[in-house]
Length: 79
Image 1 (tube, one colour):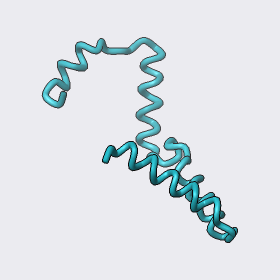
Image 2: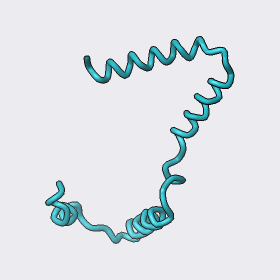
Image 3: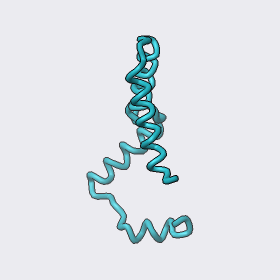
Image 4: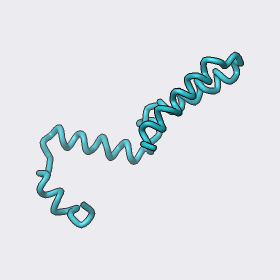
């Protein structure tokens, strides 16, 4: 069975099940799961990672960029 089709079937099964739930506690648990899953990744990374990203953005904004060809040379063994 196609994986995408299997996922679609599971979604439909969940929708059908969700439409029958009467227990508000279960609905609240599902809402909490949804909030947890959709949180901003920025809040889940370390301060070092944030600083590194911000430094990279500053360097890019000031024109301190390397051409793609240089990056390919540096990392060719992993590509």
